Structures are given as C-alpha cells and as structure tokens.
Image (cartoon, rainbow, N blue to C red; front, side):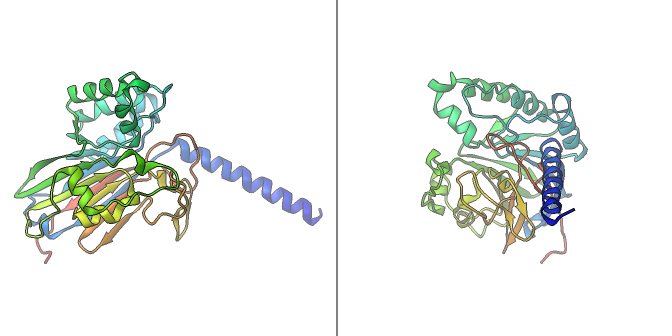
Length: 300
C-alpha cells in the first residue's frame, strides 16, 4: 500500500471517528460539578446546592426530557437558575419543548429564569412572533417560575442573603463581529442597582448574565458569582485553549465553558444543553451545571 493511500485511509478513519463523536455529544449530556467557598457562607446552616441551566434550545434528552429532569432531581437542588435561551427564537420554531420541560422544574426546586437573546428577540418583536413569548412567559409564571428581566430577588439562607439578579443587555450586544462599550455603570443602570458595597458581608450576589463577552462589566459591578452561557462551549474545545468561536464570530473567547476564580469572585460559563443553526459539538459535551455553595466555618 503506497503512502498516499495510507494517508487517505487515515483521514477517512479519523473523519469517521470525529463524526461519531460529534453525534454522541449532540445526544448526550453530562452533569458538571463545581464547589464554591466564600467567607460569606459562614452564615449558612448547611451547604446549598444550585442547578444552573442554559441554552437548551428545545433539545430533548429521553422521552419528554425525562433523562434531563431525572439528572436534575438526582442533584437535590435547593434552587434552579436558568440563564436563558431555553427555546429557539425563530418564526417557525415552537416553544412547546422548552415550556414542557421548564414547567416541570418548580416541582423539584424554586426556579429563577433570566432571559437570553432568543427570549429577548421574541419578546421585543411580538409582530414577528405573534406575541408567543408573552404566552410562554405567562404559562411558566403560572407554574411558579420567577422571571428576572433586569430584576433581582433575595432569598434567605441561614443568616446569609442570596441576592440573585438577571441582567438583559441591549440586543445590539449580540450582533456579529460587534462588541458594545458596556461598563459596570451600565449594568447598575440596567438592574436599577448601584455597584455592590464591599461592606455587605451578609449578602452574596449572584448575577445571571447570558453573554460572557461583557465579563469585565459584570465583575466591575461587583457580583460574587457570575453565571453565563450563550457560547455553547465555543462549538469545539481545544485542550489548554478552550472554546474556539463565539456566536459573534470572535475566536478563542477567554470565558467559554468553565469555572474561573478571580480574587473573591467566581465565574461559571455553561457549555449549554443544546445547539441551533450550527449543530456541531466536538470535545464539548452539553452540560447541566451543579454548584455547591459550601459552608465553611473555618474560612478566614
């Protein structure tokens, strides 16, 4: 066998294996576990477990998403946080899958839902989407889901207050090859809240911010924990590098599908659960993010 034939066969086999791996990753998810410790958690009576979901995009795992629901139940969460894009914002796309799945989550734990660009697109253009987002949101609210659309809520956890905010950026912030000059002061304006006071030792602030491209603004605003999604893990992930490309067509984003600790702030970007338009994942399995806020009496 000559060398060109060997090379051809190698490429053929490698391509087939990569194709199988892409198929596998498009149809199977994992549960990714992270643990966070903070001086502020000394007031907890016990550890708290959070589930973070993002970018389902109407994906189905098992009949009526039962595999996904069972995986969430198994984590025994105290709170479920949604980071947006559970549906697909296209004229011909139904929201029924996202509605059926999300409406069952309050049976597991309280649910807080911050929007992504797909929900925003549908809400802001009712003439295109026949006001379907208003129906979707109302049905979920009727089932107990709390929407955080540039809003916040506080939840007592022992002597600690968890303050959870969901920020919505302007729709232009999602345009291809464009990044707006968004600052920490803009985040405060969107949320109608000043930047975090460093003296608020009993308040742990969690910011749900769909697009991680503006992470410096989120950090500057002062959240203790920032939860983002949107990038679908960067489509393909390379060892030591991370995600390859963003939906805005920027290469090698700094935050794309991992947990990063920067000083006292923690950043978690979910790789998401689904895809749309570009239905490819490679070395980038969909994920449910499970977060343990760990009580630590001895942390100084």
